[in-house]
Length: 156
Image (cartoon, rainbow, N blue to C red; front, side, top):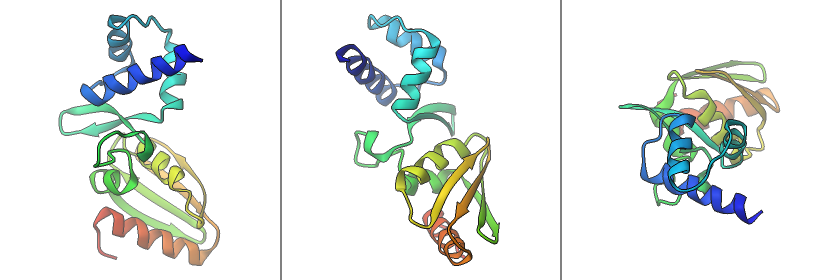
């Protein structure tokens, strides 16, 4: 377990200090630090560390989708940081909310919503640029839509 913990710390340090765009690039940085990991091990590590590729002005990069994983005060993986950058539009019907993001933004936003553990949200399903949120009730959907648009900096 110590090796895994140390490897996770190395991954954390690499991602926080470099704009890593792919698993292959991350594997090369790990190899330079003495960690020769398989693709499947690295995929599990990325999942456990809640890392996802998010779009940036310069392309894409890995970032933490769980606010607790970030080490800086701006909490780069938190919903209130991600949503203004990745939000496109939101709509819904009944107990369902459909949240549209920029291309590649759905996974990190859905992970951030899941980590928030909102009582009104039963779960999320994310594609590349669309997230389906299942709410507890029609009233809950209204609260979720208002909260999402507020976090995104949009007006209802």
